[in-house]
Image (tube, rainbow, N blue to C red; front, top):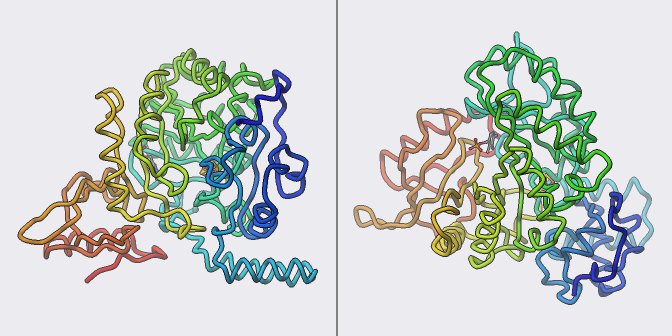
Length: 452
Ligand SMILES: *Cc1c(COP(=O)(O)O)cnc(C)c1O
Ligand code: SF4
């Protein structure tokens, strides 16, 4: 049963639920002592933030702890190793000083690999020799922009690869205060057709603030800039943002203004599970966004315990298409944070994608995956085959730091245990050359490709 069967106010105001107030929620009363302890312990290390809509309308309280939305948003014991869990648990029980606890927590966090895919050092755009904060330019046509006040979310996903930023480990390097550099950079790079405003979740920002970031871009003469994209999970975690929040209508008017300028607005909507489309307000949010002329594209990582079932993906894409959305990417879970808890072998990811894809009509087969956002680019697992007597993964890059590498088929030795690109080894001599070429284009990356 969803706890929201209990009536609530029709236009609830957003309130973050964290370790400090989670004990006030209806779901807490349904959690076991062990589950509560896990929240207290794990949230010392990994960020925990959710809200009442997620806990009451999306989590099924009768299915704890396996419920996918519970796994997705509430810290679980297995997200830390048993040793790390005991370290933190012990420190809390012993009432250690906050400095002693912080030192232990810091050591555990550093072990959890906080630099996924070289994003911190690579892909930072430069203007007149100066590194620009809060932007990334990895693929020629698309610039990422991280507005400073958008570096949080309406709820945090337990698997999130940006966890290190949310707990303050990375400072605010991914954060732009204002957009004057953005406009100048776009002016100097007419090859950029897409501006992808992302976070965290940029739509946690109130509309006037978002407008302040965007206004200089919309006022500038940038004929090459065609698509304004918003990376967001609000459609799933807080659809009220588009329906009943005080500035919901203003946000939709902003979309309309951009569209009236002759540009495309693409909402890059992060959905993990079909239950996120099951509530009336979730569907109303989609309908209202679509009414502005904006298009919604659906993307999501594949996460063990949350959505590792092809039937769920078929349902998600089928429902999404029915609501007028476009399935876009299925990602492989990144190699950071509590990866051991959530990751799946690449072969399993490929099987799940294939089965899910087979279960939907061509209108949903716009989706591509499973794709790894690795240092050299977005690596698509096309399948498993036997080539020249050798079992191989067939791969291609959907996006590449080096544009010339896109869509060229290449092969890696089949490895049934591999969960990420850096565990793969080139299958043939020419693949070794190709891997080396990708490696050369990722110089300075903290995580190297495995080469034979
Ligand atoms: C995925 C991604 C993009 C957008 O790629 P599209 O294929 O255009 O959706 C842009 N920059 C980075 C760093 C990305 O990971
Ligand atoms: S909504 Fe996106 S950025 Fe926010 S926690 Fe989830 S995956 Fe991370």
